Image (cartoon, rainbow, N blue to C red; front, top):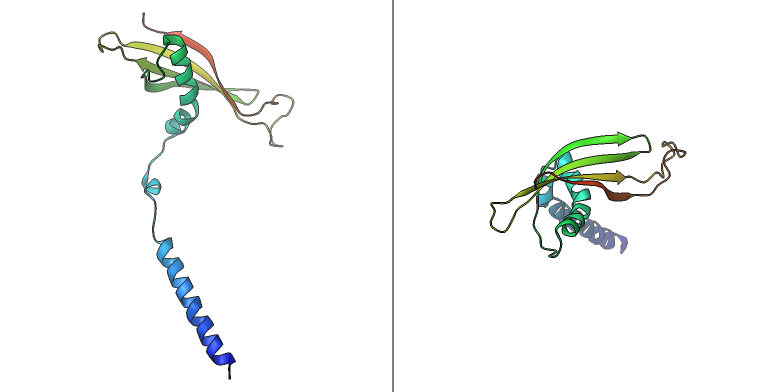
Length: 137
């Protein structure tokens, strides 16, 4: 006779638990509504390394602002790396003497997959500036 009340209590607790799980699963984050492009992903990867190089080129303040204009090109190399060329703009304090630069960044994804030719690809993940050109004086 004692089994019936315990079984009923267990079933009730199960329903409460399942119901509370369903309530929380309906909530969604704002991130699901974001639209992300390939350019956004590349920008997230190369932004910090370009930022360091711009500070090095123009000196001084880590708060030096620069604007991402566009990706000029992406080249795949046979050693499983990608060269991404980005056009950036460095505004001046008076906004009259804005400079444009072209930065080539090499993205080297990790080669730890068996599907990649290990003779040509033997590097870990790395992002580095390969070339930096000042387009405007």
